[in-house]
Image 1 (cartoon, rainbow, N blue to C red):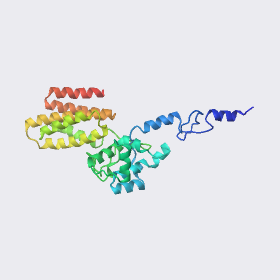
Image 2: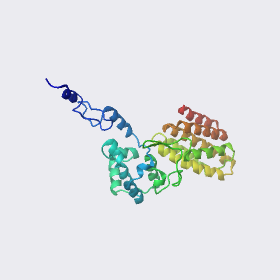
Image 3: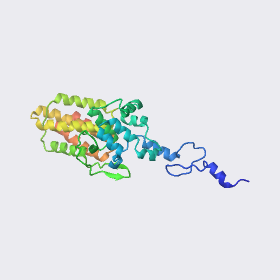
Image 4: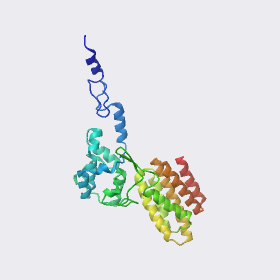
Length: 294
């Protein structure tokens, strides 16, 4: 008669344990991880996490940033010890490429130096998508300065949870809100601005929300400066309508990012802008965007 010990171990997989949580694996589980850890791993790889600055404090990252080559940054990111701890291996190029909108081959060529990327708009997209801090970069992100910290963020383990009440985007909203509330609006180049709104409307369906928010912040900051210089009342009304539209698009973007508090604040600013424009159609459109969030 065989002892119960070996039978029990065989039923549970010969004593194999999940390296993620330590659970004994079932005999029919041929995977490396248990079901729960595999699910968590899938969730982990669904989108780039926002990590603490300490994540980038490695010799590989410092050399990559000093080289000013995004391919080296990609390689340092993928081969970080964090992934070895969580996945048992480096983050693969296919997953990384899916995050930043590149094929595996393009990631490989960038990392090996066979392909270079020097377009700052594209570099900004990569940095925003991967949540790389501004002060680590050799170029400025939209609406950010390399010297400005983000004091409102709170840390949970390796991850950073940004506070929705502060940051560059919220400061921008407050300035725009004050412009409308104080009646100090003005503007120029109205045709171009109205075309920008149309282009954003076309991009909302497929463009990543993080990239959209950065681009919207940049254009709203420029619109703010344009309005401050305009003295034409007719142009003022049209630009105010543009500001209402852009603010409404920020609302939609914040809905995608699940930042409900910031969404509500931008919805209020959009309503004020639409009311200042004295345009019933724009005001109705703004209310419709706000309704999506609720």
